[in-house]
Length: 122
Image 1 (spheres, rainbow, N blue to C red):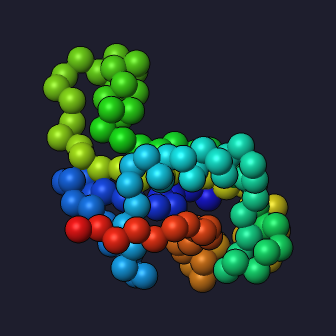
Image 2: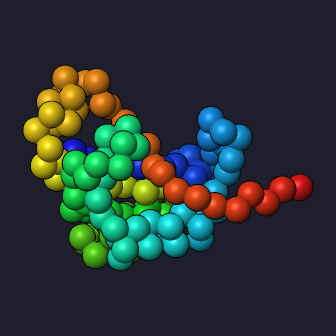
């Protein structure tokens, strides 16, 4: 299964505020996902702490990385007017019951789990 795990900045450059009222910087999002790729790569269902999937793909999308990717693929036109920052992930689900829940649409989004330090933003 593939999709966006976290969006820090929308495609038009607007900073995202999540349901808890938090925002994350590009640098913090990148660092968090790089640490996850190095240290864990396991996914569970609904934060139940029971490994159900393994990360097989991860890409923190930024305007600079998207431009570099397109150039590497031979894109010669103008770069897209993309200002977003997001984490794209792919998981191999190895738990049959969880996979059935994904396929049925019961589980249709990613929910990241982590800790951080809140800082007031002026």
